[in-house]
Length: 469
Ligand SMILES: [Ca+2]
Ligand SMILES: [Ca+2]
Ligand SMILES: [Ca+2]
Ligand SMILES: [Ca+2]
Image (cartoon, rainbow, N blue to C red; front, top):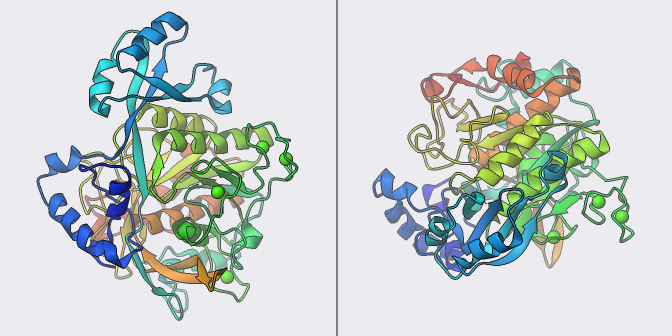
């Protein structure tokens, strides 16, 4: 893991932005390194200038009108920015929550901040940038061969590591989860056919592949989830979905099957809500991904206590916070990466981990010696706990001669810490089926082990303890 692997400047170029700083991503192309170093030079300026550069989709705004505003008034408002409606976002969850207005993705020739200012008015609920998010892994190291899965170890496992998540001790007590617990993975796609994931991946029995939206959720044949970036039902699109696949393996790679790695929970059903593509993901698609999983829980009556969110970027989005709150109202935790800037989130809030929504658990990263990872963000009030995130071995897709096969690799980032906590949620709910979000969150936060490197840097001052609840 090296700091120069933080960001992927080709993304910024693709979006035509000179001001973008990608606070969390992993570099895959060696020829990115030069430009990444330039980025770091830019990042080493003052915190004020750093917080001023948030990546957005150029010439786009998310606009929500108040209910009952006339068509004439809407047209007039949009005319102020020469706006053209690109897409209307009205999810099943918004309808369930009594909102039949939704919001619009509006194209404008104006610069985003200029357009935002021009859209202020009494007919508007919000007009905000369509932010771009990136995942929060920091390194893509050598392929897994003989790695120690230290994040799963405990104080009295063999081998032992007191700074692991203690999951191994839960397994020794025969606590390995139940298949009826579902976890949503809001990320890149996931290689669901991976040899160590296939048994723990969700299949939508209520919407078989027949060209019809049998379960009526608005997504045709969402057999393993939905790809909101590509707007299709293929949630695995190749080796570019390595980050999502890695996250999935930490939550729920099949344990005890003699293959590869083991996730925190050995029996679970993971659902992919892919919204991060090769250029990252947008606020509009993040909202759709969050709402998709919330609606799925209610529509299918499944036990889905949490989504894993190993991504971040952008500024405050009312549209996204609303979606996170709708998830909270449906008893779904939003487990979120604190980010990889090595900075204090209390000083500059990071999103989505920094929203005030009660159902968020924000996760920092620790190293196997118990120190906080050099890249990890922290915050005495904004980050809840630490979990293993440096040199984490998990599942990835690998490609050889055009053929995709199951592989393993070690990655680092708050991206890797977060799924340890999501797996812990699944394990807790396996033995406490009726638990509410506040009960689950309280169980996880109150069982943490005091950790000097996290004292004053997280709300609990502690690290994840899967054997403690
Ligand atoms: Ca469907
Ligand atoms: Ca179907
Ligand atoms: Ca796809
Ligand atoms: Ca395995």
